[in-house]
Length: 502
Ligand code: SF4
Image 1 (tube, rainbow, N blue to C red):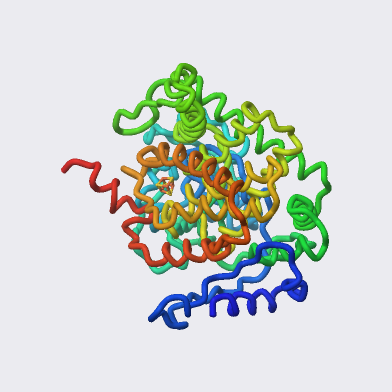
Image 2 (cartoon, protein in one colour):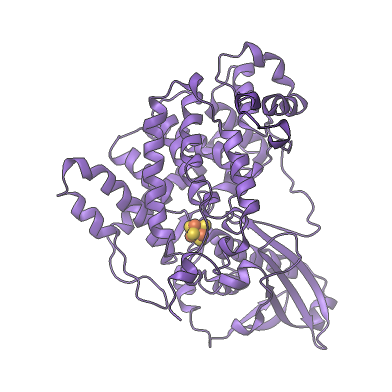
């Protein structure tokens, strides 16, 4: 039942399905409901057909200040977009303007203070861009009494924390993380307004936004099964298809795509390098100590059987602690999971000594997994819990190390599937809304699970495996939709409650 439904969807959305039955690949097979007494077809889940993925690697892998992609990078990008919109307003509108108001809803309101959402908004309105953001300014913005005078569209504004309203946590907007930005006139009237949504991983959109001026993918796909059919039909490898699509979507050449991949790999490596050399407290209203350096240093004297696991953990802690400190990090797929992929990147470079070309190919495989998860489920803790952040990061990291070390597309998919499958159901419950507990250690576990998934996949007979990536992604979505909002980044359930004394 499931198999037939799934393939029917694939048939509609892909011209290459004709070659499916002749395929040499391990294709999604699913277990017949007849195998289970009492299980009817109605209980089988029907996968929605969502069309081809239009996303670019520059959307997925973004660089910006920590600690959160949805609560820090996206608000910074949003206020930067609003600033640009204001600069393009007619002079007579700007002449009537007096102030700017920002209203935060949902998880942005519930946990935004711990995620530095307010500082990110002010930084964006002051002209900062995520990838070049002055992290010293972000630190300075901690002072809630400070006021900044800035000129926008020829008009002078005084900006401070009082322009931000922490509005309702429960609301009826279509996305949990909603942010409304307004230009207010002298009589309190709204002169210009945009309703923005932070949709996870630093992505954002606004109500009524026209589609971006981008190209279309040369090889359109919306699921792993469709992607594998393209590989077979066009006799191209995973990384070739990813490269061709990226060039077409962004209307650029090889050079630009490679430069972006190298920038991402370098930023990840640097985040680990810096993190394993730093000590002290992380910014928080309670005492929270870094430990990556200690774990790393002690790994050098650890028993041989413990050493590698300890080192990978220290790398993940390092990337994640740097993110919590507000350093520049990469959304992979989010900043909450900023330590998971960098741990494996550092390991691939410094332990396995892989070439830059192999690392790029691995990053492209990780990108494919990230795209599929974002497209068919979500990478936002506010939507699907931590399975969408650390779970997806672990899945991406496992695909990356597998493909970079020469695994086939089947083995790469199995690695990604195992890593994601064993994060299903994980809630998002950051204590006090800070990306510290449980987030930092979760990155270490995400990295270790990614490595273990890679080892298991290497030894898997792929044709004997039942689970496939598409179905596990759908299971993640279904699980996330059924989760109580208490466990989706609202700070009202799980550790966020039990860790706090009355
Ligand atoms: S618990 Fe997981 S999803 Fe939630 S903020 Fe932390 S890392 Fe992100």
